[in-house]
Length: 167
Figure 1 (cartoon, one colour):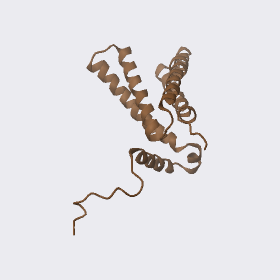
Figure 2 (cartoon, one colour):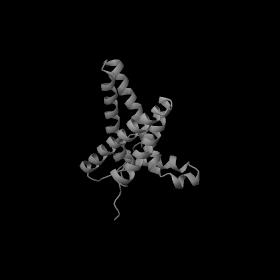
Figure 3 (cartoon, rainbow, N blue to C red):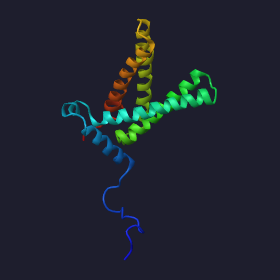
Figure 4 (cartoon, helix red, strand yellow):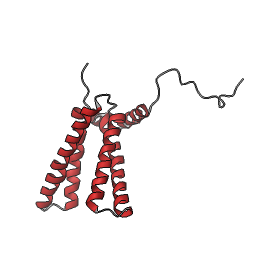
């Protein structure tokens, strides 16, 4: 008789456990912790979006630090580099893990690029700049704009970029 530790488990039966299914299980478990009334208002994909957005924002800041402090690139170049890396990674991770979309990558990418451009103009340029011009402290203005960005990006991902077609 062989020891169970000496042979690998038989994975040929049952559904494959993938990173996407693991992420969905953790996302759904986090969603289940919400109070019932909030769980009805906030979809599980919003929890996944928040987790992935936090990760990509941290990577944005890491890339900024590496490019600006480490490589001494000009600040606008470093900020743009971090922004591009973060938004590209956010697209890939949300498509793969959170929304588990199998739609056309080309069409989804086009919609995403347009959404990111609209997000930048509406929230980073217009809203944050307007608030700051009206006398709101610049960090507070950016935080308010960031909250608007998060809601806008999630809604666009859920209902436009990765929308599910009815069967």
